[in-house]
Amino acid sequence: MLHKKPARYFSALIGFVLVVSSNVQAEPAAPKLANVAILATGGTIAGTGNSSTATVGYTAATVGVDRLIQAVPELAKVAKVTGEQVFQIASENMSNEHWLTLAKRVNVLLAQSNVDGIVITHGTDTLEETAYFLDLVVKSRKPVVVVGAMRPSNALSADGPMNLYNAVLLAASPEAVGKGVLVSLNDQIHAARDVSKTNTSTLDSFKSGDLGMLGYIQGNKPFFYHVSSRKHTVDTEFDIANLQALPQVDIVYGYANMGPVALNAFVGAGAKGIVHAGVGDGSLSNKVKPALIAARKDGVLIVRSSRVGQGILARNGEANDDELDFVVSDTLNPQKARILLMLAMTKTSDSKEIQRMFYTY
View: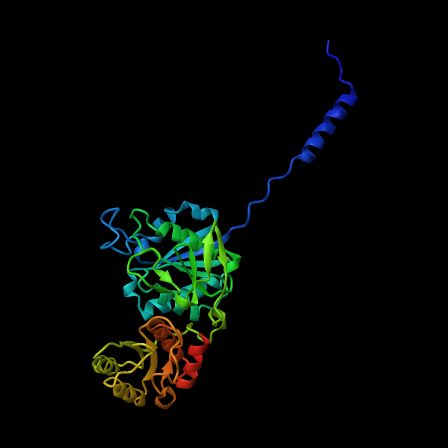
């Protein structure tokens, strides 16, 4: 014979269940991941060697963006990642046309609400130039991070996977918003304007010289210690939306016993601007100075820079720039001075206005 349970038994049981349920804490909601687009352009980070110890003599730009992403499954923990193969080239083949195509694509993507940041994989040889070009023409405060590798993808201790992970982490980070185009390699964060490749092959090749890097990436977090004071991205006056080509600007390298042959050849080939990478503080040899003066009188814009790589180039120091109507490069190295001069020439041919731009950007 079944005995009926007292009503108070069921009431107590229900009360116990309610108390236990109220004490169980709900699982915290997973943090919302940022949407990061990876735009691949080739380079060593996408390169392969004929063995795992081949860190020279490898072939760049052989691995597609999908394989780059698949090689770092940890990316899924820090961002929602998509990939796009914009180019597949070694970066010594990067051209003005490539820059315009890439920058326009970056601006289109950053204008979309479902893109929070962009990572660009790139060969290291011209990485600093692409980064600075983008720093001047990207029209968004959203993070753009340019990343590469010093060792091919199949090498022992290849640096590409960790560099890519850090770059995506940085592009997804609120701390990177509004800081201009960034370069991230070797656990370090650099400003596009200041960073340069300084060694042919070592992993710590990218440095910002006496101006210093911006910070580190450590423990899955970026740490910024200072930012560049120069205007960039949304605060520049350059607009490439309808730009189909850039003016021809070439670099003339200074050295002992230098003559005017290279300069005259560039001018004869149609150069509209010349960056003179002079010795020391941008000194002009007696053999080349008359040719530079003649080129300027013919309408060619002249920027005095230095092959040294660090330091401010003094206006009216090694040459009377006011009298000669030359521009000085401030702290920009020759290859970056070329980029700024090209963009400046899309706005004006006034050397005084261009000098203002060199002191602004």
